[in-house]
Image (cartoon, rainbow, N blue to C red; front, side, top):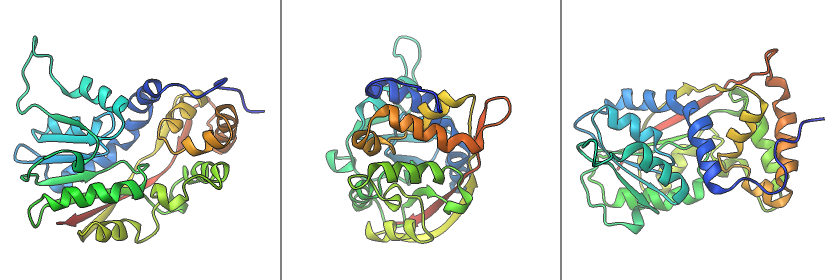
Length: 270
């Protein structure tokens, strides 16, 4: 029987934001770096990150010299991003200072001038991203680069087994798999076109998910938000048990867990 990793209700939003920042988000660094290398993100880049979360992707771009702005509807994740990105005025001054804004581009007068717009969280619901993309594109200059990321083919993503379990537990209220961008061949292209963008290239990146133990794996996966509907439909203890069982094939002799995944990114133009 799988161990009970949590009892009662799921941890608070702040704890989940920390789990995302400290456990899960780092798994996506190969994706972020590959995209930035391909786009030559650097001192002349003005980057807008949609669903920027706890800000790791923005931090990596800022370290390359980019002027970064991030939007997210999750205030608890934004709070962590501010800790990471905003300088302490008493100790240092970072120029340009990143902007971290609650909500979506529709909620702010961002103005033009962004050279790159990114949406790199593969777990973000596609239905919520489309209007944000449309709003960002409406204020951007023709030819501005937009990058979307999603899961690769299910047969190339070990984590797809766990995501299928989340969808099953959440029925009928939960997201279907394509709503969390477990990408079919044309999912990202369809999303880009629906937002008024023109697809202009794509690529794939290997992003293994590695965890020190089962408890860390469950905390990291739950922090993505993909399991929220499943938790609401059942309870946290049941979801933890199901995740632990789904992870069993990926446990190694020392107790670590590793799942091989491929992510896909799409480059589009305004």
